[in-house]
Length: 271
Image (cartoon, rainbow, N blue to C red; front, top):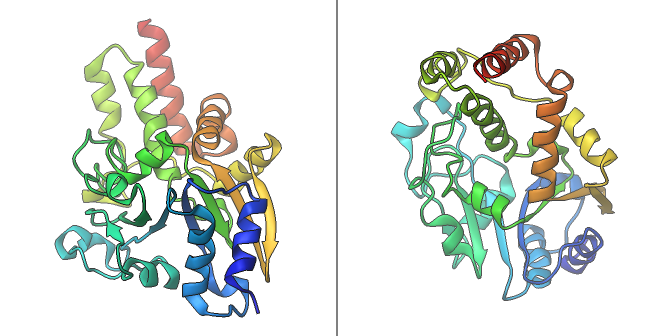
C-alpha cells in the first residue's frame, strides 16, 4: 500500500520542496492501493509543501460544456477526477470563480491565486476569454513558476497548454501593423460561442512533452504503479512557446498552420 510518506518522497525526487506552489493533474487509480485514500495523497503533497506552500488542483466543469456559463455556480462539482472533487470540498480550500477552468487551492497563496479569476485582460481562448486571462490562477502560476506534477497521466492533460496557445496566437496577431487585417484573421479563430467552429491550434501535447524532455525540462519518478512527471511552469512554458514559434509544423495541423503562415506573411509585408 502506498502511504502519504511515499507520495512526499516521490515529489521530493521531482524537485518539489517546501514553499512551492504545486499544481497536479492525476489519475488516482494509476497509483494502485493507497493507505488512507484521497486524504493520504493530499497529505503527501501538503506535508512536503509545508505552511509556506500552496497546493492547487484543477476543478474543471466540462459536462454539458455548451451550457457551462449558464449552469455555473461556485459549488458545482468538478469533473476533472475524483481527487479534484474531494479536495475542493475540504476545509480552507478556495475556489476560483470561472465556469469552465476553475481551480481549487489551499495554503499560503490560495486566496491570492484564486480571488480574481475573471477580472483581468481577456485572452484568446475557445473556453471563454477569461478562462486564462492575466489575473487567472493559470497565468499567476506561470508568473510564479509553479511546479506542475502529473500522476499517471501524460502532458496531454496539461491544462495550461490552452493558455499558451492563446499567448502564441496573440503574439502573432500583435505583430501585424494593419489592425483591420489582424482583426479579420482573429475572427477566424474558435470562440466559446461557436465552439467546434473556426480555428484553434490545439497543439500536439505528446510531441511537445518529448521536446520538453529533450530540453531537460521534465523530471520523472515512480510511486506505486504510477509514473510521475514534473515541470516548472515558467521554463517549460517558454520552451513550448519557442517550439511553437520556430517549428509549428511539428505540433499543429495543416489548416491552422496555413493561418499562421498567412499572418506571419502579413506581419513581414507590413514591416
